[in-house]
Picture 1 (cartoon, rainbow, N blue to C red):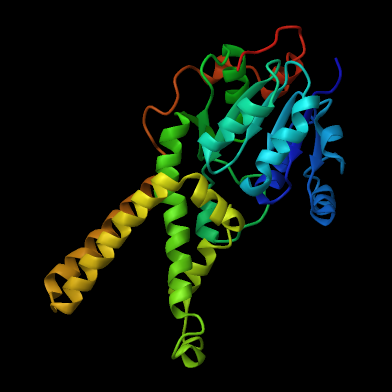
Picture 2 (picture 1 turned 135 degrees about the horizontal axis):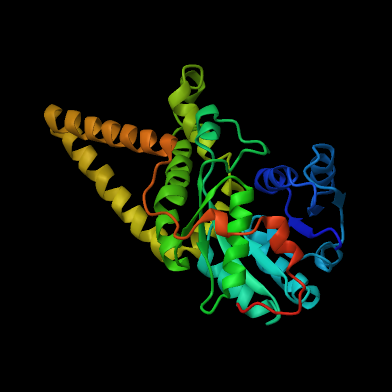
Length: 323
């Protein structure tokens, strides 16, 4: 049997980490593509891919699994370019931060003879502790990866996705695109938008020349929120998830207005309770996030699911998966 092939489209931190994690399985052939040649070569030097292919259609034409981790700003065009050459029986997986939009692009541009799956990964809590955003084989280790599929997805496709997630040392959380978009508007987009607003409020404003010399860890944490993940496509993701983002911003404005009112009224007890509740709630979340001991995450038995390389090897056995 020929060596199974995985194409990784987009070799940023997520794409590079996928390649490094999957590289632990010697039976896989990893082809990498990135619009920035220098980034592709760096991924090759890190052994995140076995081969770099600069022509996008060529990168996917022999792949059983196609993993798209590009910024959301480029993703629709990528679906359009690979659609005519996607092999029969292959599975196309996107890691976009907006799942409904990605699913619409997949339905519009991908042929019926392939499958489509949307993934939204969380990350290893150790990565969050270290605060260093770089490609690493354990980026997904011990975390959840949300899974969205179109109606009628075949059992084989679902098992294959579970095997992929297991190969990343993560666990699946099955959901739907609308729910994931609603959740991400609050736990990903809103923090980044808030950070951008805070920086705009202080950078190069009166007092900045001296204030910048005193800004420390708290200030730095806002910048970090704009340096990780999909921050480069924050404006596109916000517009593609517009309704959810608007609701999240309204809730944030309500909290800020309440905070302002308490400060104006010199309401010390209310302010103390506000900050204490936020800190205690955040600490409880962080403890849970580090332990990762969530209940009722996925049904079935891992032992019943073939390995990812085995699922790849079965991809071209003549049965086209349903989307």
